[in-house]
Image (cartoon, rainbow, N blue to C red; front, side):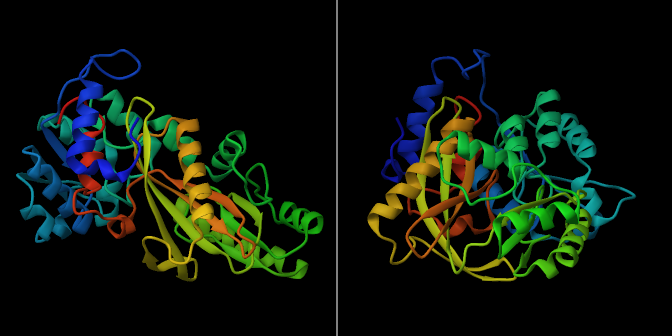
Length: 352
């Protein structure tokens, strides 16, 4: 069992290789090493993944919109190709059919999504799988389940993890929000059911604010995520926001890389992250880490991900969500012997 960060980079890779050497993934299908990896992203995260790929002796492939033809990430890869001809810069990176077609043409074995863009699109992961290309991330089914806040909440309840009182299904009308407020009281918080990053989120203190807040949040969610459905929870006053970095392999093994405190926020956007979380009682830390591993094992999580919790002033923690991807702030969790980009790229196959 992979038990802690003390394994270090080489210990983690050797252990994974030994486990995979017996002949493949749990479904019994044989696997083989991959040697050419495309990063379907741009900028800093693409550069970081290319460095990890190159350190591992593999070939790296960059993609770029024409507007990014002078970007630094192109020069960090062994090969680079323009994508999205006739499309705008955002659409170019979101058109996964073109990206997958290009990957097949140039002999790519695996695609790393980075963060943002296609990183939490289960349809992209499924399309890669269908095309015979490894998607470096969670399975499409797990990604779809964890990307839905209501489904993720249900999974947490099934796993015996405490959650904040909230709706058990996405809601689409302001009246449903009014009914929830009348039943549970305030304050409450409205959240986009199928999004994150603080978009489509509103705190509501009084019943008279519900209607306007719901309509405003729903419009923002629709614009940002293509779905205006909302999710409601009781608002926890002045909580700490604690997130746990996880890594999982394809044999049901999951480790945590301890926690980060991301309580300093502005408009629900994280501003400062600290690892480890300061002034966190050891018994509380142990409970949070245990629950993060519990939900990951419950859903069969693979690769890098983050489980987020709220911690109230009485020391009670509540599950919020799972980020089924490598996060922007993953660099806050560092070890001299472990780079998160590197083992994440190594996990889908037997040998790296």
